Amino acid sequence: MSLPATAASPTATGIAARDIETVLHPTTHLADHRRNGPFVVARAEGIRVWDEQGREYIEGLAGLWCTALGYGVEELAEVAAEQMRDLSYTHLFAGKSHEPAVALAEKLREMAPIAYAKTFFGVSGSDANETQIKLAWYYNNALGRTEKKKIISRRRAYHGSTLGAGSLTGLPTFHKSFDLPLPGILHVTCPHHYREAEPGETEDEFAERLARELDDLIHAEGPETVAAFIAEPVLGAGGVVVPPRGYYERIQAVLDEHEVALIDDEVICGFGRLGTRFGAEAVGMKPATVSLAKALSSAYLPISAVLAPDSMVDVLVEAGERWGVFGHGYTYAGHPVCAAVALRALELMEERDVYGNAARVGNYFQERLARFDDHPLVGETRGMGMIGACELVEDKESRAAFAPERGVGAHMERRCLEHGVILRALGDTVAFCPPLVVTESDIDEILERFGRALDDTLAWIEAGGGAS
Image (tube, rainbow, N blue to C red; front, side, top):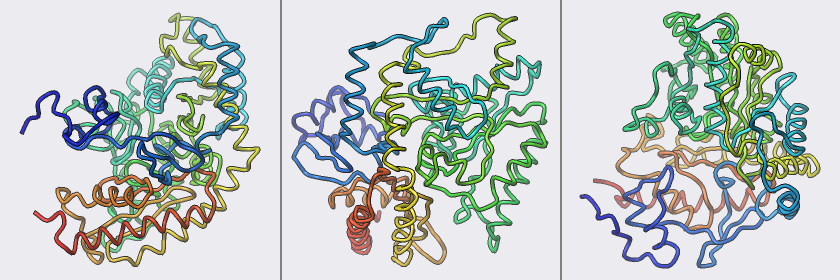
């Protein structure tokens, strides 16, 4: 049944009603949103947010995988205000520059998981990965390898939602009815042993099979046509998937054999999420280039970065002698206020030992989360560091999933909200990604509220909830 253009929820009032009338939301079921209205956040402090009725919630997903330092950090507000007064805006086009962008680039070069990195700035993880595609194409054109353009991603990966980055993403929602993926973007099996392994296949055998699959695909396409393989160290929006041990070493061997670059998408995993500064360090990746966003500024202002080695940039510079202007960039790339805030956020992470806290509390979080493995609804808990997931199943022994139309994950997410914890249902997988400043007692409280929501959801299912 189609809805009239102004058919707002009859119960929506205030900001909610105004939202329904005026805002087109990203990654939202638009018809449900028009019927039910938004969840309105009024203020936030530390790891907690309050809605417009004054109800308190623990933010268990760090906003959107990004508020590493939590909310209301005064030092970041002060840096932003000071920078706005000194230099509210300038750009990096046509060789212009400014101190905040240079200082941040210097900091990233010092930290980077690749040697001798230069930084190309943007404003989102999507545009960072869009830049990665264009850099790969431009670089290979500059080397005369005009056919070496294809990029391989993985099913269930998330790399953004623009035309190029959305094509790299391996989730059907971001492809259907958008005419994606674009030609030249290929996908291989998601490295999720629980869901993708063959009967009796060990994690080691599974990793070996996925490496063979990648090798076979590159051979089939022609190594001279494949430019890069892109990977999140741990897949985020695809269900918090931790690849099996040894997976990246096997993948790297295949890539090296065929001169295929590894693009490391650190948009979620970067800056402490896996208990190390970069996710690549935690899982054994050896990237050629790196994408950063989200925790780069602890989400206080929009900023992203692509790190490229000097060896790659030298090729681009040489091409400039032949082709002229490098025709790629964004108006707000390296925005001085965003850059100043990001630099201070990175400094605060070091000053406050946020990486150490993420490693210590992350171990505690994984131990506590694993206790839900015995719950009747739980097929698997998984995670690494300060990111985790709990996958709900209809039958534990067979691993049978619930029919999507039953909406079990969505119901579970609503029950979590009722119990005062904000988590995210990715299908029937509930994702956790708390701010990196949480304590062990915070983890206990998050999981206690989650446990009550899980028991509520089991009771709802046993009562026939969601059944057709």
